[in-house]
Structure formats: C-alpha cells, structure tokens
Length: 276
View 1 (cartoon, one colour):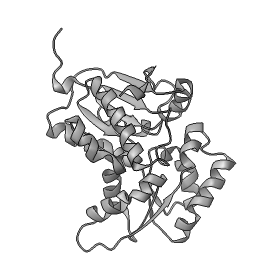
View 2 (tube, helix red, strand yellow; view 1 turned 45 degrees about the horizontal axis):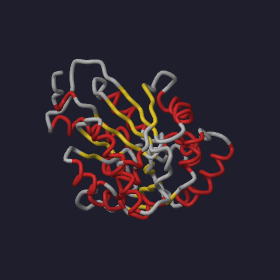
View 3 (cartoon, rainbow, N blue to C red; view 1 turned 135 degrees about the vertical axis):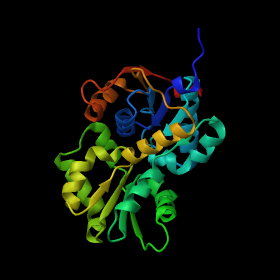
C-alpha cells in the first residue's frame, strides 16, 4: 500500500467532551478538504475542576491516541488543556500543536473599544491566568486594558446536557455574569469551547453592547496558517471525519447534533484512554 504523504494525514482534535466540536465546525468550514479525527474524553469531563497535573496527564493520553492514528497536527480544543498542557504536548508529539487561548485573546484585543475585557472559563483556565498573559502579550504598545475574569464551572455540564436556553441556564448565567456586566466590559471572551452553546442566553443577559468572542473561528484561521507554513494543506479530495469518545456515545451523538446539525457526525467509536 502506498505510504501517505504528510499532507494527506488527518488533523487530530481533542476536547474533554463535545465543546471542541465548535472548533471542528470552524475548521471544516474553512478547510473543507481536510480529514479530521475528533476525540471527546467524555468519561473524564469536565477538565476544568481538575489539577494541572491531572489535566496534563489526560491531555498526553489524548495526544498519544491521536498520534497512533497518524495525525499531522494536534489541536487542543479545550481551554483548560490549552492553558496548562501545550508545552508538554509540544515536547512529546513532534508535530505542530495549537491551542485555543491565544487566538481568542488576539480577537478580544482587536475588538475592545473601552479596554475592559471580560474572560469566562473553567476554574483551571481562570486560575492559570493564561488569558491575562495572552491578552497582555497581544495588546500592542500603549494599549490600556483591564481584564476581568470569572470561572463558570456549571456552564460545561449545562452545555453537555443541552440545557442552554431554559430557566436553569438563564439563572446560572445571571449569577455568574452579573458582576462582569456591572463592571461594564464591552468584550467577553467565551474561554471554554462548551460556552458557545450558551451564547444566546449569555448575549441576552449581557446586552447587545457587549461583543462575545468565540475563539473557534480565530483558531481555525491559525490552523490554516500553520498548515500552510508547514506545507501540510490538503487539496482536491472529499474529507473524512471520524469521532471517538471515552464514554457514553449516545449522549455525545445527541448533544453533538446541536453543534453540527443532524448530519454533522461521522463514524463514532468508543476508546479506552487509560492504556495510553
């Protein structure tokens, strides 16, 4: 059998659950010919309440599984993993590795008019201060920015359950985000790939004057640029998408259709990540 060229290999994406499908959707829209393998670690979701050491361990296991599938690029489509695991993943994998924090930070800096940027994420992402560091790194000379952060751990299970526009979601959004609204942020970074599912509820509460930043689109742009730089872009074929989960494929399929539509999910298999 003819050996695959590097560009023919798929892009590997992992997340703690279904949230990374927001990133997959943007990649597929921007790079429709690329093969994609998606891994949702549904047995161990959420990552955001776990220690950095545990998140790194889980991220490395996810990466090893995807490397076994012969990927050409690794996308950590999980803000918690992006916040703490990228150096370890880059050291171990030997292929291009990209996270979701820096693209979102750059978009927030470009978008803010008042200099007041809110960031919401999991406990681990917020504690890592990864967004503050990325925003300060992207702000440019002379820009005065105030970054106000808030951990919203219940948003992940709400998104996973599909409870995105009911009274429970509305009440949770109000409790978590009232302080950010009162402080007058004009830009709010959705610092977890699950959070875009709650975008409508969040936007209604924050008001139309607040711009919500979903880093998935910006991440897809970075992925395209990185593939071009490494001469890894794939052209001229129909794409294949395979999906793997570590638990409960039925629920993944159900919630995944909210992200991708009824026909968005390809072949779905279950994998035991503990052996990696």
